[in-house]
Amino acid sequence: MTILLFGVTKDIIGSPSLSIPSTTINGRKLPKNVGELRQFLGNAYPELNKLSSLAIAVNNSYADDKTEVNSYDEIALIPPVSGG
Image (cartoon, rainbow, N blue to C red; front, side, top):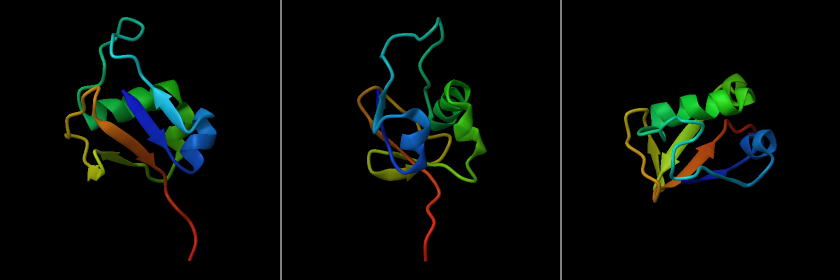
Protein backbone atom coordinates (compact mmCIF):
# COMPACT_ATOMS: atom_id res chain seq x y z
CA MET A 1 0.00 0.00 0.00
CA THR A 2 1.48 3.35 -1.04
CA ILE A 3 0.27 6.57 0.52
CA LEU A 4 0.99 9.93 -1.10
CA LEU A 5 1.75 12.74 1.35
CA PHE A 6 1.18 16.45 0.97
CA GLY A 7 1.97 19.58 2.97
CA VAL A 8 2.76 19.08 6.64
CA THR A 9 2.13 15.31 6.43
CA LYS A 10 5.20 15.09 4.20
CA ASP A 11 7.20 16.97 6.87
CA ILE A 12 5.92 14.78 9.72
CA ILE A 13 6.73 11.51 7.96
CA GLY A 14 9.86 12.85 6.26
CA SER A 15 9.06 11.63 2.76
CA PRO A 16 6.67 12.42 -0.12
CA SER A 17 5.21 8.92 0.13
CA LEU A 18 4.87 6.07 2.59
CA SER A 19 4.83 2.38 1.73
CA ILE A 20 3.09 -0.12 3.95
CA PRO A 21 3.97 -3.73 3.09
CA SER A 22 1.06 -5.88 2.00
CA THR A 23 1.89 -8.42 4.70
CA THR A 24 1.20 -8.01 8.39
CA ILE A 25 3.18 -5.39 10.26
CA ASN A 26 4.47 -6.26 13.71
CA GLY A 27 1.93 -9.08 13.83
CA ARG A 28 -0.91 -6.66 13.06
CA LYS A 29 -3.17 -6.92 10.07
CA LEU A 30 -3.29 -4.22 7.45
CA PRO A 31 -5.99 -1.57 7.78
CA LYS A 32 -9.19 -2.61 6.00
CA ASN A 33 -10.82 0.80 5.85
CA VAL A 34 -9.95 4.48 6.12
CA GLY A 35 -10.78 4.60 9.84
CA GLU A 36 -8.35 1.76 10.60
CA LEU A 37 -5.75 3.40 8.36
CA ARG A 38 -6.17 6.72 10.20
CA GLN A 39 -5.68 4.93 13.55
CA PHE A 40 -2.70 2.95 12.24
CA LEU A 41 -0.99 6.11 10.97
CA GLY A 42 -1.79 8.02 14.17
CA ASN A 43 -0.14 5.28 16.22
CA ALA A 44 2.91 5.16 13.96
CA TYR A 45 3.20 8.96 13.63
CA PRO A 46 1.58 10.64 16.68
CA GLU A 47 2.18 14.12 15.25
CA LEU A 48 -0.55 13.38 12.68
CA ASN A 49 -3.07 13.27 15.55
CA LYS A 50 -2.29 16.91 16.36
CA LEU A 51 -3.52 18.20 12.98
CA SER A 52 -6.82 20.10 13.12
CA SER A 53 -8.09 17.99 10.25
CA LEU A 54 -6.74 15.32 7.95
CA ALA A 55 -8.61 14.29 4.83
CA ILE A 56 -7.88 10.96 3.20
CA ALA A 57 -8.51 10.34 -0.48
CA VAL A 58 -8.82 6.89 -2.02
CA ASN A 59 -8.50 6.63 -5.79
CA ASN A 60 -8.80 10.41 -6.26
CA SER A 61 -11.98 10.79 -4.16
CA TYR A 62 -12.32 12.01 -0.60
CA ALA A 63 -13.19 9.05 1.60
CA ASP A 64 -14.95 8.63 4.94
CA ASP A 65 -13.78 6.28 7.69
CA LYS A 66 -15.93 3.40 6.40
CA THR A 67 -14.41 3.39 2.90
CA GLU A 68 -12.53 0.14 2.29
CA VAL A 69 -8.87 0.25 1.30
CA ASN A 70 -6.81 -2.33 -0.55
CA SER A 71 -3.11 -2.64 -1.28
CA TYR A 72 -3.61 -1.51 -4.89
CA ASP A 73 -5.59 1.68 -4.08
CA GLU A 74 -4.06 5.11 -4.55
CA ILE A 75 -4.27 6.77 -1.13
CA ALA A 76 -3.40 10.36 -0.26
CA LEU A 77 -3.22 12.24 3.04
CA ILE A 78 -4.44 15.79 2.64
CA PRO A 79 -3.70 18.06 5.62
CA PRO A 80 -5.48 21.32 6.39
CA VAL A 81 -4.39 24.15 4.10
CA SER A 82 -3.91 27.77 4.99
CA GLY A 83 -4.03 30.82 2.85
CA GLY A 84 -6.53 33.18 1.50
